[in-house]
Length: 473
Picture 1 (cartoon, rainbow, N blue to C red):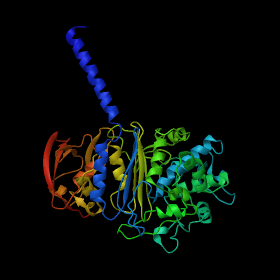
Picture 2 (picture 1 turned 45 degrees about the horizontal axis):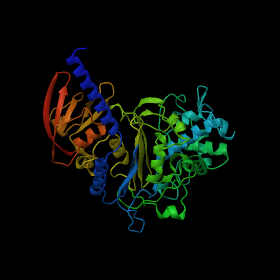
Picture 3 (picture 1 turned 60 degrees about the horizontal axis):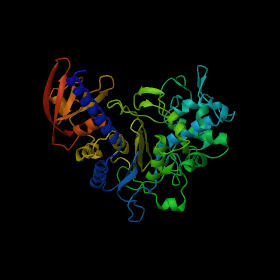
Picture 4 (picture 1 turned 135 degrees about the vertical axis):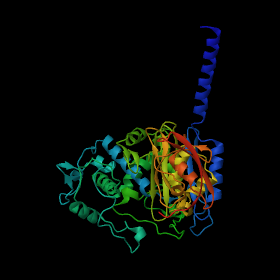
């Protein structure tokens, strides 16, 4: 080896080691990121309360802004209780995996095995619905049953009066239009049925099962369906999309689909165990629920046993899992990056504000929250933009215009579907999520946005400057 080659080798080795060290050091959330998140919350949370939890190999931290609005002036914090909605589903599938481990059930057991003989469980072409089908949203059941009617006279509390008898009646009357296991279709009623079956098998109720097998091992003492007076005092009051107080949701047989309430501090323990940061006998079972069962579903990206990634990890080569939830007055999200072993929790006590799910995915991908993103995600600006629909191509890793809305700034400027968006206001889309790109394009009416577009048909790049305005969909 000559001296020049040796020098190049040593320099390359040093550069490689430095890159590896820098990458390792950046796996966790930095203090600067945490400060930016706290500033973002203070600037953009006016009427609602939001709590964001971060966890990585250095530990966990909680950032928050807003009030409980429960008759006191208390601010929300890591111990504030929120309704979780569909985040509950990740607990239900973990219970299933735990019961499989204990030999109490099998994933391929037919649902009918655990229900009364009087219940006629639908089947198709000789194939029966299994427990795994319920856990992976592939049973062929609809999102919600046809006999679901609002309870207590409140459309916002539709599950309060949905009983076991109603669930059995729905199953006995429903006809599948495809074989179980053939296609992903998100189903609240399917997950409710799974939670009900697991409780039946163990001779207890769903909440008791969650507490005994998940909450106690992880010391999640503030995660329950039925709140004690002490937990009730820490419950943030929910609000609807207009900011008006919303009633808390009640559940009967639907508890396994969305009944849990919890805090950021509790959920950080749960997320930490999921990515192996906290020693737990549950971690190995949790990892089995992360295994992808269906790829590239239309709405949820790659899907596992309740967990999904919305396709958010494709662009940066990340291995993301998450789940969002919503009830009449709350929106929530928990998620994590399996490769970098970091996770987030986002809880909010208002429907239709800054989306916790969107914020959660952005934080997992280390996107710095900014005023522009807040404007783009604001409900008031959701119909403001230039009139294009974007999509991310997982194979080519490019952001492409898929649709141009008539009579919009985009259509008036001659833009068409198929154009590749290379830059938005001088910011490259190469390492940006689709969510961030959409947020950057949206904004206040009358403001301008500049796009660098590549036309693959003409093999040409063009710059266009468009003025945002309200779009008639």
